[in-house]
Figure: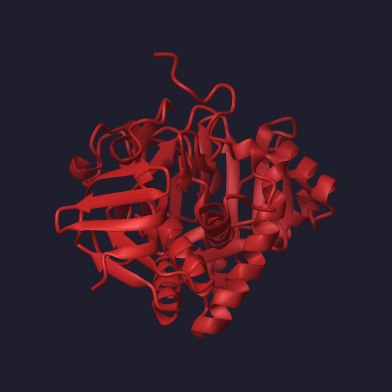
Length: 381
């Protein structure tokens, strides 16, 4: 195998697999280096499903990226000849002046998206599995749905390899250096030279981007599958994904795909971890009580004793927005990190942007709000 490439991608999970795909599709020679295996369960891109939506309350500037991501997801699904995205719709509810409902309405109005207010009567008839408080308001986004996360990562990698990408799994990056146009990546197996570099490190960001002065918060996030005592949550019955902003936290979940269990998780909270290699993947005493309280209050058709669980990782920035940019000190290095638990839906669009930054040094997408040097992001030490 050659040790010299136009581009090297460090980390081939959600974003790295998409970047590998888009770089390869442009005819550049590219190497992807992954510490674990394809679509592994040690990071942030596993657990069967991820929510996708367009009316984005986190920041309205995400919406153009989402519209591009939807287009690219459909293209990837067609090229891989498999179902990767299911537009089953999204029910979102919470206090009318809370960030979830008000922000979703604002994003929809700003970008002309289809968003429907859900009346109390419609909640009772169309969403009988949910107990929504009288002081909440709810909206329905027809374009919302879910992605099959492991299948999506594998599809990006398969298409990238089809375009000539080289993939090295089970290989650990020790360090990388950039001196002008010369980039070298050192691993536990060898050395590679490249004209450009993409770093998509997930929760390994402190070690792989040590010069980036960001206050990272890496947290452990358990996902649970709870038994259903009714068919009201079944995808086959027309159920969609859901997101509720409650006084006890933000909770989300998916329709039942097996007719027996419903996947539910808490988006807020989380136990901070110092080393992603040593994360406790058993159920901790703090994990279930918030979810049990949420289910008892809002989803009475689910039992509170889960049948299974998995653990993924959030890598949070101080403002909970992503970092997608050229490295502040190395112009030939594109970086994607700090996705704060809401990034996977963007992966094909971010992958395309990373290819722009690495191969051309710029992108036509508006990503200034994701800058690596934006105010409030950097450490003061």
